[in-house]
Image 1 (spheres, rainbow, N blue to C red):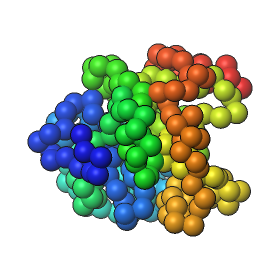
Image 2 (cartoon, protein in one colour):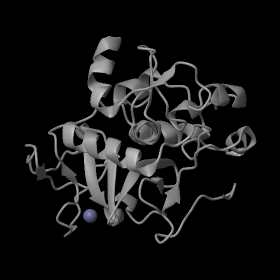
Image 3 (cartoon, rainbow, N blue to C red):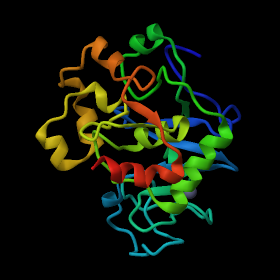
Length: 241
Ligand SMILES: [Zn+2]
């Protein structure tokens, strides 16, 4: 595991891996590799403008993973969203990567490793569950839908972190597990736009959270998280309201 880069070759990633890819060198997009070249990932459903309107369950639509651009992928399953408006998609690895490099998110990293990373969205001190459990969670959420996309509280990294760990916060006011989002202080503009790209691009001008704050918010150290079975996630979230 390199401190400088977590880039891996396609031959290196394994089923159940949490992978990510840099977009425009500014932010990372995350997903779970479930095997056979398939990635399950979470996107903002509102970003699918330009689609064909084929939003009914078990039908795909014509936008690419994450930002509404049209693609011409011929893979039969690609960009399939089984539950309308859920934002949980099954994509081929090429469409997921969008020509970006393939990187693996690291689990159970040391405190030193975590804090040495200049940017969030690449690692956590939390422990990953076995790959079968990770794939089960991702597949279940693809089949049944997932929570609402939220820039600071429930983005693509949050989705992958939940699939890997099963951890969810009992704090109804603050869920955010994404270390990428935790790097910056949200502004009212971010919340209004609900667009991670714009916010993360602001890294250069934002005041980064202090290292200690980042550490406090790491999923591996948070005291307010519990294991929630994926079949109970929906009712658990409803009970927090
Ligand atoms: Zn594709």
